[in-house]
Image 1 (tube, rainbow, N blue to C red):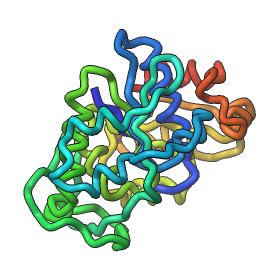
Image 2 (spheres, rainbow, N blue to C red):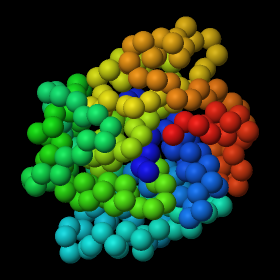
Image 3 (cartoon, rainbow, N blue to C red):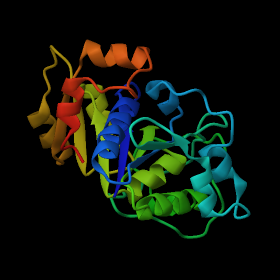
Image 4 (cartoon, rainbow, N blue to C red):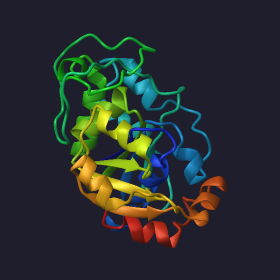
Length: 257
């Protein structure tokens, strides 16, 4: 099982949702769970030290000389049966895309093509299959390895998403859009390069939009409603989300996947 968490707009809380889901799955699955960090913030949220060795950024850049089974050596131990594949090695690369078509969950493009230009910006609108086929093949291999892992795997794809995050989210069993009920966020979600299989709605007081409006606009179900909670913010600020999940957050996400 591969679950991808992503946002169309920054500040939605994708890393918190992905980390909490992985923590829940790690406590329920006999072999624990795996959390792949493509956004770079998971260790800080879990209260883990910054990785001092290679991470996913290095593996993705290494080429065919470093085989897929090397991913296991990149894992670091997290709390309560959780294993983390840290990003490390600098911020994620951004890839180029265009506006001709969408990918749904479970669709993965693996055609051989030149890697994307580093630093190119993901354009507005829908990512086309031709452009997605031009993403680094290593990202496709990463998604396939995570999907085949016997442990449930969660990927924090960050906002955008782009590069490896775009490929992982398009290949996921469950592609979850983390969304605040904001008109601008909804517009960004409609322009996003991916079609989610469900939404995790981060509910804020005073908003005019709610789950019914989000489902109507995006035509996908809201799988969980997470209320903005000061206890979650305090846990993130203290790096203590790895030790215990706030009860509201745990209850809200228990059946999200």
